[in-house]
Length: 351
Image (cartoon, rainbow, N blue to C red; front, side, top):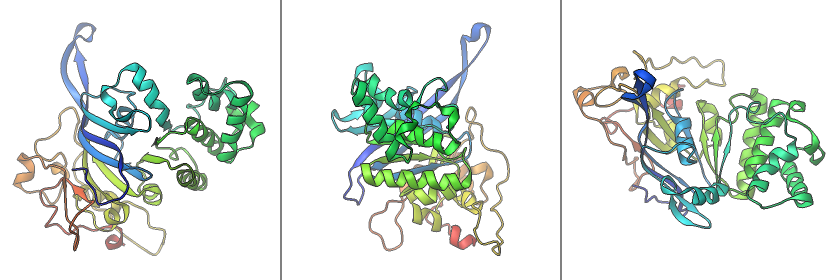
């Protein structure tokens, strides 16, 4: 599944990843009566030096996937293969505490909220320098020099290191979070909605900063977002989730112009158009989002899909490669029984 027509090797491979949170009731909540299938058999890959945008509605499991990759949650099943620069190819889900501590130097996180993710009682020197201290990589004047360099890299003045987070705006705080994530020179950075709490003008600044840093340091990003306009700007490829499952993934241009899954078509129809003269109507979705604790049979999306057939109700579609026109090999994956026959509207078609 993961042998792709590209010169860049895969840095991360997620294979049939699952996370089911138990539902417990009764006295002292000791009886398990079900499970919320937050992530339910997800597979994808990220190549070295690229950005994969992970999109979907709130509650679809995007953030849970990021936490599983970093082992903030232990997976229920599946593998997370990572090509670590020191340990080689390892399954993150099987590492012990010592190995995990070493691995986390190469996997870092940028949080969504630039306010609550920074300790208000710590200075910038303490915040940005904390990863270096925890891993014994710098102290004293060397630590100050490393922090000063990191602040300059993200567009902040080194003399700010004695200040506390309350002295900075939201965009500046997110730059601090980026500096902290870069402190250990990671290979992979998980960006969990890193611009959703910022003004639009500041969003563009942070996105441009992330792209510049990617080129300078050879970073690989998993960029989690619900905003397709942001994802289109920064991502090389896009993966779409629905109720814990991956329904489509493709190169950004291919996915936005020629979607193959009805849910992707509906999401794209809601992307705002920059030209006020363009009038479009959203592709209607009837019904409610499926309950991950009690998902429907067959395709999880079939109760809301206007293209459904009887097969969709009883048989779950598997994520599979689909050949694009004139292509012998494809980087386009979709889980829809009718993907080959449907002609769905992308951004250009909807405009």
